[in-house]
Image 1 (cartoon, one colour):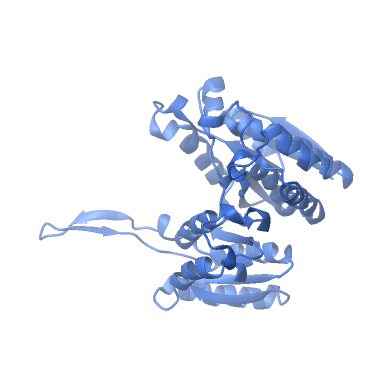
Image 2 (spheres, one colour):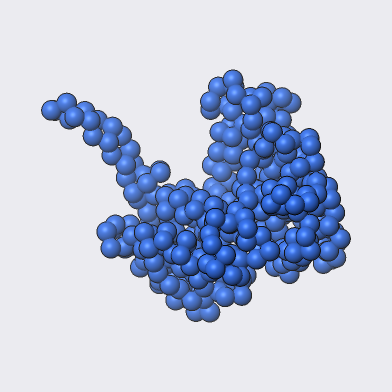
Length: 366
C-alpha cells in the first residue's frame, strides 16, 4: 500500500511535533511493507503568511488529492487582528470539516498507569490508568438544527429557540464508526450515552443504535447510560468505559471531561472522519492533536510530540485499516513513557526531555 498523505503542520509547535511524528510514521509503514508519500502545505497562520488565507487553494487541492490529512495545530497571537472568520482556526479547520463532510469526531482518552499523577482523580479510581475512546457525532443535532433563532414576543419578552434534529442515516453512519472503533480494541464494547428518558431524539438514537449493532455487529456488546449518569461515572469509575458513543452536544461536553481526567493534552490525539472514502475504500479523515499551538513554548524543544504521533496511529487505523501498524506506534509511545522518558508537561517536576529526545525514544522502539 502506498499511502498519500497531505501534511499540514500549521503554526508555532505544529511544525515541531509534525517533524517528530513523520519519521515514526515512515519507519512503521516501512516495517509493515507499506510506503509513505507526503506533501507538506501551509495552513492556518502559515497559510495567511504564505498565501493570504488560512486555507490556501493549493492546500485544499492537495487534501482533495490525498488519502488522509495529518494536521498539526493552528492559531496564535500573531494573527489576532485578522477578521474573525478569516483567523487560522475558523478559516482553516471549519472549511476543511465542511468540505470533507467530517461527521465523526474520534477522541481517545488515554492515561497510562505510569502517568496516574497527571489525573485529578484519586489513584484508587484509576489503578490501571484510563483507555477509552469517545465517538461524537459532529455535524448534526442542536448545533445545526433549524429553526435556530431569537424572537421578541408580543409582551416584549425575548424567546430563543434551538432545534435538536437527527435522521436515521446520521445515526447509522456514526454507529458504524463506533463499531469500527470497538472492533479495533480488545473489549469490543460500546456504551451509548443519551437522554432517552426525556428527549425524542435520544429515543431515536437508542432505537437505531440498538438495531444497527444487533444487525451488523453481533460481536460487539452494547450498553446504555443516560448522560447525567455517564458524566458521574466518568469520574467515579472511568475504567468501565471502552467506546463511548453519543450525539453532538453530549459528546462535546463528555469528551472535555474525559480530557481532564486523562491529564495532559500533550498525550491526546483526535480524528475527524468523513463520509468520503479514499482510494482504498476507507474513510477519509483529518487527524490532529487535541491541544493547541502553544506559542509560549514554540521553538524551545519543549512540546510533547506524543499526541501528534498517536494521531498518526489513528490515521493508520481508521483511514487505512492498518491496525497492527497503529498498535505498534501506540505500544512504542507507552514503552517510552513507562521507561521514564517524559516531556515537561508529564514530568511532574522530575527530569524532562525535549521534543526531539522524546520522539527519538519512541522511534527507537518501532
